[in-house]
Length: 382
Image (cartoon, rainbow, N blue to C red; front, side, top):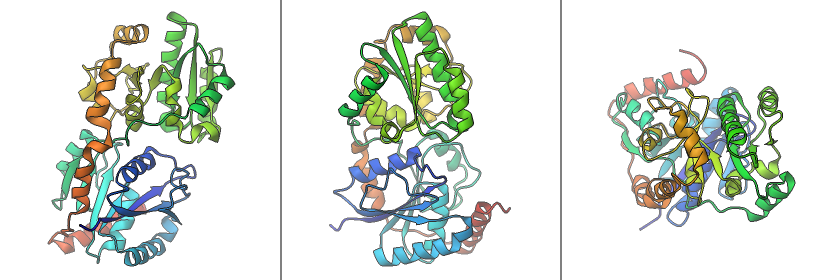
């Protein structure tokens, strides 16, 4: 049987181009590399450093001003490579893919990689959702009978830890013999609250439980203002802001240095594959991240471990207990990785999707109007 040929499209909305959906795309293509033929087109402001090393990845600079020219370039690539499926990994990529394939009989796939619900989603033959929050919302707004899959974000096996860089990190910040907290996140307004919550959690532990501890905050500096605010928050604490490329690139390979990990979304899944780690998730309504336990896992999973989580009990005694007794939930964390987060357990489902045939809706006039509306929305009109 001939391998499916897939064209992946992903958009860089800023110069750093290091969002979690880039890592999700890499995990997927790496796990299916023996089963599909593929290329990746990275549209947007910058070529993601996460994709640059892949020989299958190519960059096309794109913005609203060059929208139609970029669509023509995509149309030419589709004609030359003749993919059976086109898989967009974000809303903007899906808008471009729709325009480039409107008159082409290609299966159009969209992955909604978590995040808040949006009022509308451009058309696709198949939509994949990482969170039940998004799945449930879209299911009530499925105008064109799009085929829907719930395939939570996953990682390609246990993340290999970079022993050399971990040892370098230990030497540089004198971590040997210390209990280590870690938060990997960009220094931006989007992640500021979760970083501050991490500092609060560490401060509680450091002052009430164990002085022999340190906090590592690792991430790309996207906002000098946010970084300055964080600097003020960690004043007089054994905490470090780490923004050098040596540590921010492929930072998940450094998680092994930590005892306590604060993470969201994909970061939870990467951390869950490691042994003897306690995981906490930031939550907007709490001054502290909350521990992942068997009691709250389903609710956290529903929201793809997003800080937007609603309806979760915030038990400060439980938070303190989990900090003090590190072994209470470790066995549970190790169990959920193989059951929920390993992408190799759902490879067959993705191969089924990539062998699907396109089924453009009969209401083509309505679809055309809808597509025009999506483009106008992209340009901030309507």
